[in-house]
Amino acid sequence: MRKQIAAANWKMNCTYAEGEKLLSEVLDAQVALKDHQLAVFAVPFPYLIMANSAVSDSPNYFISAQNCSNKKSGAYTGEVSAVMLDSIGIRYCVIGHSERREYFMEDNAMLAEKLNLCLANKITPIFCCGEALNIREDGTQNSFVEQQLSESLFHLTPEEINKVVIAYEPIWAIGTGKTASSAQAQEMHAHLRSVLAAKYGNNTAEGISILYGGSVKAANAVELFSCPDVDGGLVGGASLNASEFIQIIEALK
Ligand code: PEP
Image (tube, rainbow, N blue to C red):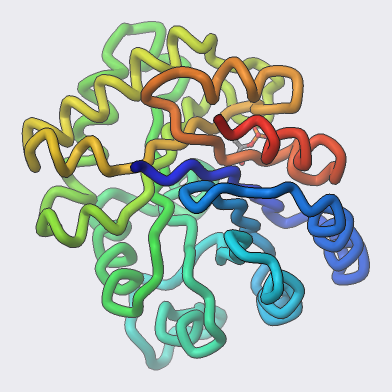
């Protein structure tokens, strides 16, 4: 059975004390998760150890980094490596968020390197893909995301791709309050799964979790998550509000 995931992306928000409070409020709700359901919190680097310790008694709750370096180690001031994340017990890392692609010039080839380093260090990458508004308006979104997948993921073996979580995040819906309709989300997720199936076969494609991201909130999570190919969400703004995010976790089907 595919994993269903409610993933919070705090981005560059919250002080340490605010982050501690937010996490403990969500954990205190003790939303019971089934074996195949996970809640993941992508928190800022300085909070990883605190957050990992906070979830340690909550089965199926995990902490994620928001990024890691494409370099293994060495003279790269300010970078954080996958080896470092592994060394503090972090098991998830967001890779290729559209904000990283846009503001930090991360391209598909660099993201492939990051993915390799995550997998080599037992870290599940949450690989983000998705098109900007002009691409959607041109109607070329399917081939655009297909290229993102093929240039960053398709060097992986079937065994490796099985360990990757994909997040489809149409850029026009991130932080804009504009959500893809459940029909648009399902259509793209089904497309992504068919692209994965063409490369890796049906069985492998059926096992890969594909999350939707883009203005997910408590009010639309149930409808989005009920789409057959939507396996949960990557949530920015609404994950900063404990009661919103608790309801989003509860919306996992
Ligand atoms: C995100 O940051 O990945 C995201 C989807 O943000 P938001 O939910 O605020 O649109």
